[in-house]
Image 1 (tube, rainbow, N blue to C red):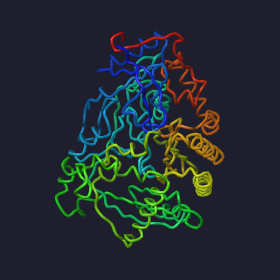
Image 2 (image 1 turned 60 degrees about the vertical axis):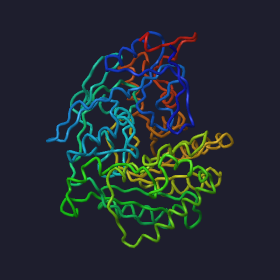
Image 3 (image 1 turned 90 degrees about the vertical axis):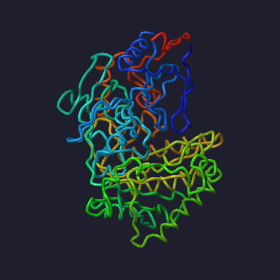
Image 4 (image 1 turned 45 degrees about the vertical axis):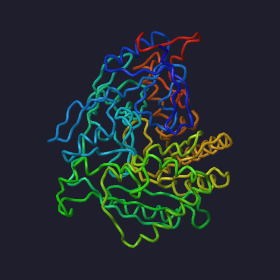
Length: 485
């Protein structure tokens, strides 16, 4: 049986074919890698395939999925510590932790990614400004490397490897066990306040005012707005609700039933068909209307209005809409998320939005966040802001989208900013080198030490760091199958 399969990034705009395998144990995972390497194939790692771009692709080589390595190995409720295999998803984790009054300290905007993928991407959430990325809450992990075998890494043990693997996209080794510190909650809900700002300056000013008093903070920016309204946004601020402030039994909010997803929208429309109903709006005219409507509705509510919302609903809004990405059509979408230092961010984001409008390549969904720096080697985070932009890709505009994406990447470099490889599909190697500099050279040194032959690779790594060692694949046809491995 040939294991060759066409794989795509989650945005569906980029893809490639590879031999795809799913091991049922850690030992089988390592065996697959060794057989692939002996056959002249490099190996890429894929969790749930939720990276928007090419991070989980490995053209004409091998991709190993970790979805079956999904055991929660241990949960220490008293100390709020959990050990998991790499295929455990964010959803698996919160469902395990929440009934005990615990919650992952950092989650991305979807509950579907695996923890191995989250660590490899060093994902952040709407609270990055306060608690940092997920890596700040990793206590230790077990790592298998092609050259040095199994290592246990932490801030005290193999610290250089620890800080490079988190955010290293599987280039240095395979995490086989991850230990995380969880957050203890008083309730499973937050109080959310939505407000609006009329332009980009107001967005920056309001964020800086709200950061000290917020547990979570995110802005939804209308990229279609021009002139004096450039950058107008709706801001959502959320804070944990204490047991004392909650009007009922706080234990009820830890129940999984409390956080179920709705089967119907507005009590009538089946959730499974909402993406089809949304599809006619996913174009420039429709999304201009949607963005305007979101801002206009926020004006009507912006009179001190707030509401309570479960953590799951607040964090994972898009997961409530099954197959939402399919509304973008066959070409899919890509996301570009520039991270820019605080001093340069407002001017840079203004130029980015104006560039998109001039070129007629306007992001349909734009999300604004505040960030803080961390100590990981290849880190996207910094003392500044990010602007995550979703661009629809069609046969007619693909070249224009990539050109705009690379022009944005030039602006990021000029501003002293960083790239976020969980989302990126367009940055060039020279831009990545300019952004990360000496840190990238240290990363390359660790690659040569831990994976001399370049057994572990991906389309992303070959695109952004092309001089890493990498087995390129055989010139003659060769099939690596689950049976042969």
